[in-house]
Amino acid sequence: MLAEIIEKEKGRHGNFLIFHSKQLKRFDKEVKAHLYDRGRITPEDSRRLNFETFGRENATNQYRHCGCIVFMGLHHKPPHALKALLLGEMKEMGKIAQWMIDQVEMGELIMQIQQGSGRGVIRDGGEQVVYFVHHNPSSVFPGLAKAFLGATINRITLPSLEEWKQEYGQAQRVAGKKKSRATELWRYCRDKGVQLSASLKKEFEAQPLPPRKFLLAQGLLS
Image 1 (tube, rainbow, N blue to C red):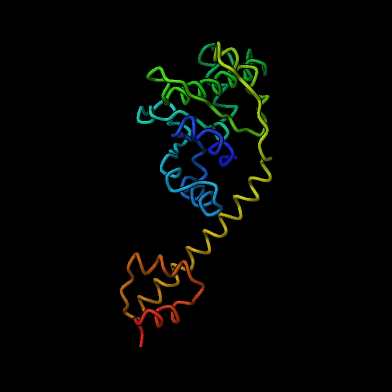
Image 2 (image 1 turned 90 degrees about the horizontal axis):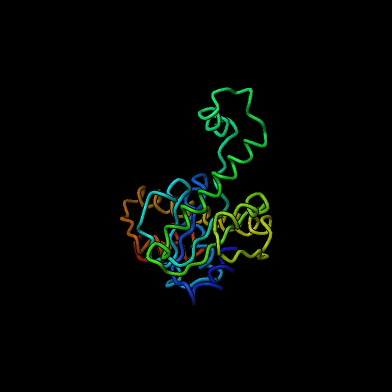
C-alpha cells in the first residue's frame, strides 16, 4: 500500500510523514528495507520517508517540509477511556448511551487526523495530500467532510490488508534470517578471536556462506 502511495505522490509532494502504531516495532526500518529490496523505492526515496507513532501527531513541528501525510490506521481508545471522557462531563454513568460513546470515538479519531495532518507543509500555508489507510474507512468517512471543510475527499482502492500482511510478513521473516546469520557470525568471531567490523558483517549478510568458510575466504582464519 505504501509503495503505491509513494510512487504516486513522490513527484508532486516529495517528503512523506507516516503515522503508525507503537506496537509495530521497527516498522520504519523493516518497511524501508522491504520496499527497497523489491525495487519499489530508491535510496533517495528512503530518505524522504519519515515515521512517527500515534501519540506524536500533536507533539512536533519538525515535519513541516512533508507534503504527503499517511495514516496507517488510527489509534482507537478503549471503551472505558471513552466513557471516562463522557463521565467527566455528565457526572452520572447511567446516562451514557452507546450512541454517545460512538460520537466521542468519532471525535477522537477525527482529532487525530486533524492534528497529524497539521504537521506537514500546511503549517506554512502549503498544499498537501493526506492518505488514510484503514480496513474500515466508513467508520470515520462521514466525519471527514465536516472536519475538513472545502477539502476534496476521495476513496481509492489499494491492495487488501491481507495481501499487505502476507507480503510484509515475508519481509519480516527475511529480516529475521539476516539477523540470526549476523548473530551467528558474531558468536563465531568471538570464539575464534576475530574482530568483526561493520563492513565484514555487511559482506557476510550478502553471501550464503557459513561463518567458518566466509572467514577462511577472507583470509582471517588459517
